[in-house]
Length: 160
Image 1 (cartoon, rainbow, N blue to C red):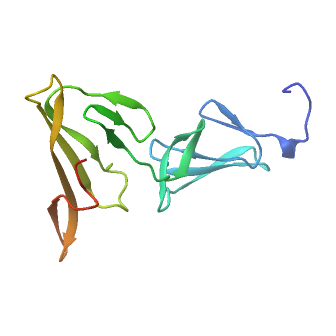
Image 2 (tube, one colour; image 1 turned 90 degrees about the vertical axis):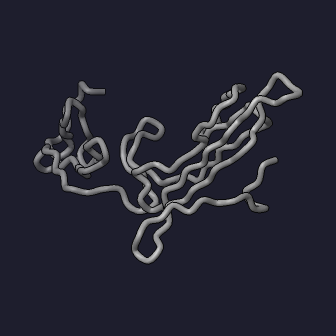
Image 3 (tube, rainbow, N blue to C red; image 1 turned 180 degrees about the vertical axis):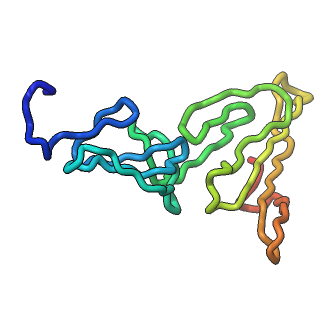
């Protein structure tokens, strides 16, 4: 590998200190602003302005940087102090406080902006804190104007 001679049409390209195979495509720019291709006939990288499509997000997945499909994920509160993040990592927050549990990313323009806050207070009868309130707000478009609509607990959104 790397020591054999190849036909000129099989030579690749170099860009940003990386080697790309002839015909290989890749994304450049912090937010995937350019889609590039290694031109086999000229051994030059050709890029065009582009961006990720709907339902995609720019980032690195399995070591590959580029536009990747959004995968639905969930996060959850288990008991009074254990939290499971979108990536499956478990955290513990035993203290009393008000914090942001989840909120939308600015880069997800296809979804309405939302924020979920949880308030925990010290329990009178136990040394732990308990969830006392959950605050949910969703930024909605009403007649062309943006408005934050707070949501009240429902059968779908409830404290357990």
